[in-house]
Length: 328
Image 1 (cartoon, rainbow, N blue to C red):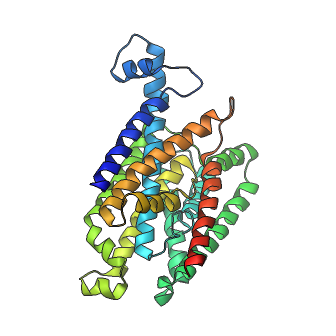
Image 2 (cartoon, one colour):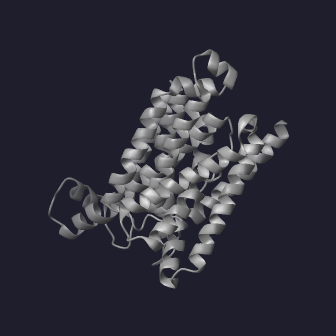
Image 3 (cartoon, rainbow, N blue to C red):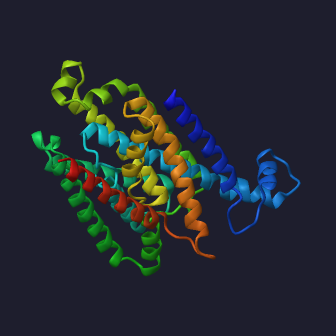
């Protein structure tokens, strides 16, 4: 009874948070204004325009991005048996950012071309990590973590080098975007991110037994009829797709995929189904409030989401490292 109750509570909190978030912004709207706009009332046309064209797509993007990064982190942690894995530390975010940076400077500003370039960059990062951790090195947590960090730094450095020689206005826009922001999101962003996150969640739920088997060992998984190499390849490909779509639209938002799965395991459960469902709801709830903080903490300014999540995530990362050291 504990798991369904916590999940139901998180869903209720997410619904209430979503309604309240639609009232937050430079234009003052009441809950009644928002509710009437959602129901299609034309008593306040300005409120309807603000809700449907600006705040609602941004809210849905925040939910999708938070859920997608949390699910990706949970999948990567289970697939690699690495409790410190997430799209940022695994190099996926830096690779997608590099591809998107190149596309945003060299190619016309088209959404699909940007997402495709980010996807190719994320795949390139995955290939580099695989290359470093070939063979039995994949099973060593320290090797996979260090390889992901090294790939992240290398690809981030290449991105910085490219931006340094780019046209100043374009470079400044890309730099702010790579820090993570939902200010550019619209209904097109929702249409791009939602299918990728949905496919990752559905496939991960379909492979729930195989994911749980991977937590034991590769040998145990093989005795249960699971092909660990093929399963990891499929899951990494899907997490690369989700990360690429998110980076292409919202930039780099770090550590969400690290923090949320650990919190969900503690409060909800460790097996695949409660973990994935919990990450979906808790990740969405987390990023909704991070976005609310980012756009309301400073007057007439917006803090990049990546700055806030990096501060929280770095502290969380150090706490996990300390716990692992104490347990060793």
